[in-house]
Length: 392
Image 1 (tube, rainbow, N blue to C red):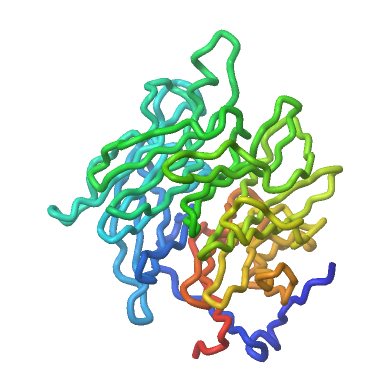
Image 2 (cartoon, rainbow, N blue to C red; image 1 turned 90 degrees about the vertical axis):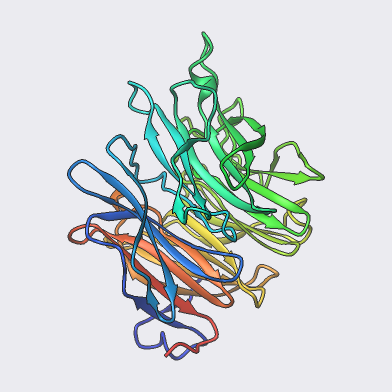
């Protein structure tokens, strides 16, 4: 499949404009995420690392500039991992952020710890452990979703069953709804066997919330699955598409989901038959069924995908192009019916783990992209692509 790559000469001649923004993040920052609130406010979060401390901070984009960074939390016992990055969910005052904190002697014994913003004190609260089993095991790869009434859905991969039986069981997917004070209101096991270390993703559809993740069958097929909350109950896991990718280890390459009304877009990486491919599947019924997937990229890609749906209905997928020695951060734009419109090079990056996962967020018809620049000292960078072609 041919992809239209916008060159430096024509990046301002199409119906989009690419612009790098100043970054509020300091040197030695990484694990960034762009996120938005219900009013369209945009935020950039990151983790900065010093000699002994890791610090989670964020800024808000206001009137063409970033606000002064605000610290959410810091600690000397955090588990900082290139693929498992914190989430910041801004939810009308019921704001939540999380990080990973070591919990045992094992290299991968760590908890999901969340801080809930205290409006009365105008400060972030003490950390609350999200996974409540008390078992020292791997927990992470979190997604969050505002649920209304100042409640937040938190989904995560939970390793409690990998440690508490004579014959260790698989990783599970769990979800829980928390109130604005950090109280766990209700919790579920959403899937009893998942891939160990692929990111999860969540979105709100017209019919309710959905969570996508990489499933794991007894035959070690690692395809993308979805669970949906319908009338306060979760559906059984269903495959978005049957790739039949059989792999004996975790590819550390999770899916992404976005939703607008009843349109749902899921992007993911697969490498069946050793052919790296990024795919996109669309649903017009809030995730109940999906179209046959479109091919976004391959074979010169290592995935690391994200996806957004613009106000105009177009779908934008971010992915890494590894065709040359310097990897490129790409956006591919699709019609709501799945036809490719074009492909856009946003920035030159690196295929190394140190560069992490680029993350995108959309406000109206503008996509914001954040990534880690590892060309010198690691530092979070951010750019925006306006698909109305109106940026100055």
